[in-house]
Image (cartoon, rainbow, N blue to C red; front, side):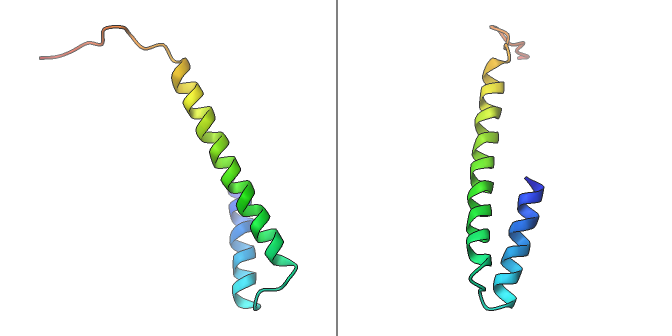
Length: 63
């Protein structure tokens, strides 16, 4: 994820400073899509992992 983020930042800088070169725009959009998909997969994996953890039926309550 960090590698994709670094590539995305680099592509954005190139787009900003060199007046949107045609070869960099598809790279920028592709990496953005990969970042979005990777974050979604991490979220799904986190939720599956959280559901598989056994929680006690009656948690300790301090009154």
